[in-house]
Length: 97
Image (cartoon, rainbow, N blue to C red; front, side):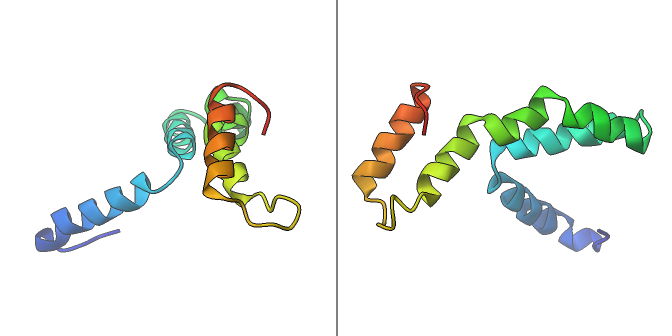
């Protein structure tokens, strides 16, 4: 992205806000992939990143479990705030969601 000098700071701040709205695990995973890509071939980057802890946290970490708790339809019923809070607490204690 190329912007005029006068738009550099506002544009940077908008992008930073967008990044901060993403899952911390996905941001770290993306950063890890970008760092790998600076010194490796495309194929090696994809393979190394797919097997990395950063990538595994995206799909198995607390953040994705919290997202699943919020998205759970609870047998066709909407989740109550109390149920959501209870599930988040359980996830943080290491219980299955």
